[in-house]
Image (cartoon, rainbow, N blue to C red):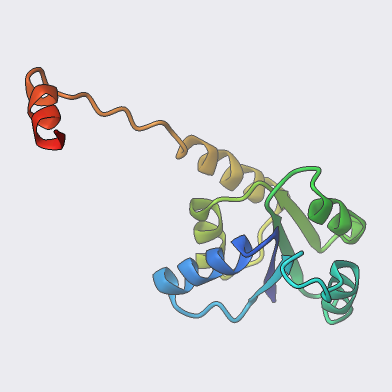
Amino acid sequence: MKKFLFATHGTLATGMKSTLELLIGNTADITCLTAYVNPEDNVDEQLKVYFSEVSDEDQVIVCTDLMGGSVNQKVVPYAQKENVFLIAGFNLPLILELAMNEDKVTKEELLDSIEESRKNMMLVQVEIPEGKKEDEEEFLA
């Protein structure tokens, strides 16, 4: 079974899961770890418990928010297993594509998906037609 762990600083993980749920429905295979939200939560212990419940037949795709961040560093030891992939710096197009594909993925497929999601990130440059700017300035005055 393919499983996901979104592990982030703060509530980014639960926000991403919530958005996915809105778009695709069932997200039962996604677990969220929201680090440093509650002082009593222990990230190391949460990871230990999560991975103790993962079988060798499961494939786990862990998505963290920041390469080299504390959450990412805490996941690295678990990513040494063959059935665990660690992605740092994830975005919605990437996880949407991965979550919609029910099959397990290969390293090459993950690399392709990551590259494709990078291509989809861009600066949207809107050109304001001549004369339009003056109309907006009058409106805002």
